[in-house]
Length: 235
Image (cartoon, rainbow, N blue to C red; front, side, top):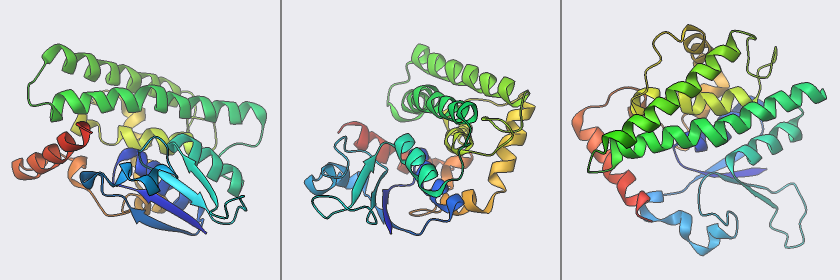
């Protein structure tokens, strides 16, 4: 059995959607970041970085008897794909492509969209050059994905993989980041295909549904999300 420690965020969904797609049994434990639970000592033993998600694979024997703890969303996805023997190509070239596009999300799409969220949504003062910087860079990365999807159905090639899940979990919230997808027809079609996958759909409800980020929320909802994010950013 696997325990998933998570919150309703793109990085958290990367783990839950992967688990659902792989049909690996797991239990989800919500981490309340508003209460700084991710910084408590018990959780830091599992995830030294004090972030979500993290997993513990209780089926793996360890010296302390607590099971194998894994943190960092990309590392979790690779571990789960290898454990199940699915969602990552078996051949060397295919595995390399999947890993490259996974790293593309972790090193580019996630950080750039995350910073776009900070400056566009969360900071009380609006610093326009910073907003422009991160929104424009996010759009550029979307265009890289668009070019790749003009070459193959999925990012790693002919096979759906963890690379698709990782990028989709972030790109799907482009509206919240203020990044348009107009003119990126292949990217939009790819997003629609992932939205239609039952496993991915289930993963978005873990640990609780958070649909407000998918479209422009009402003012009260946006304010609530922003207030929560500002508290987390200060820690």
